[in-house]
Amino acid sequence: MIAYEKMSRTGVNISPFYIFGPSRVKNQILTSRAFSRPEYTFLRPIKYLLGTVHQTFLTSFGIEPHEYFHKWKPFSLDALSSRQEAVLKRAVRKMKVFLHPDRLPKDLTEKQTLLCKILWDVTADAWEAFGKS
Image 1 (cartoon, rainbow, N blue to C red):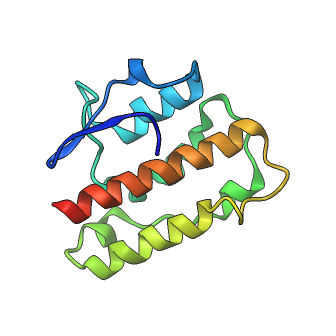
Image 2: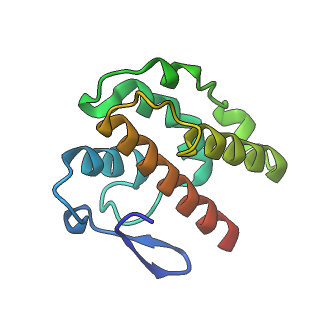
Image 3: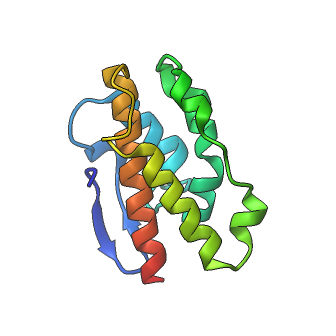
């Protein structure tokens, strides 16, 4: 679990300034991709996170690209927005398999591994929040 606290049943309350450790990359990923603006206090919906994760791999926040990230085939936001939970569940499973620590290439740099870990944690937390709603 990454360093933010669950404050209510309706969402995840965080503050990017209280993230443990001085990781600029972690802070950038969380504030630009994982949390809703303007207050950055709630996770974005799981559908949005899964539909835009490929942009996180492309942007990379100063992290050098790796050929492994190009293997990700994104889901369309339209498919994820359909009210079929099976599609969403399949997308979450695909994401977890792709980011699983045991399946990552051994030649990833420390920052690339950190990117995968952050995305793994955010996906798990967003899926949990979706299940509670």
